[in-house]
Image (cartoon, rainbow, N blue to C red; front, side, top):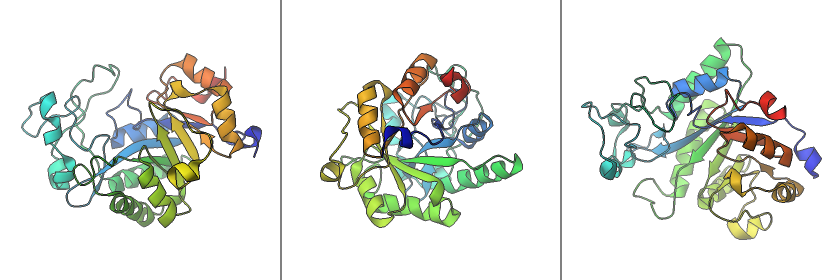
Length: 284
């Protein structure tokens, strides 16, 4: 398929962790605000609790930068991994606040008391909000946070992780509106084998972007390659498009970079600031 045909579809504006520049990351308020800002896709991460609940969280532990303990205290940076979500039940997880601490990297982020939500609860809230506001359906881009060095330490092994995620998506009936993404090709390979209709996105950081031989490298071919945006060139985008693979880079937070990527022909971008880096601004 030609590059022109691949990119003819709607440009995909994705709200990173909802809209991390404006609201506490990976929370329900962040997702609803992103919908108000007309993203096409809600990007988020999921981890697993000790009682096999799928929770929306970037780290599998409580990050010291954003967390307030149930006692009201903060977490010492060197101790944050001791608050391992994979070793906690969800009724413990929801007692931690992740929205009140000021985040120095995101000074415009609105502060509020908020918890890490169950994925199922977040989906229910998003779907109800879409109906309430008469908004068109959105996509979900959900990252499996796994690594072969942390199996059974911070998360289950890939097959169980994938099954727990897919169980939620299938029960909620939204699997046809979901992209499953990961830096861990093991997880994506398992999803491709057990749930072959799912869209898959291979995340890439600090390495050369492959443009061919995905089956040999990973055992599956992704629908999307999602690299750190500084790794992209126009030639890489074109090569991936020739193989019918979309390109959606992360995390693009300045307008000049967004415009440059748009001119390269990317199929979308993932941004913390969907208020300032919207499709109209990029096209100008």
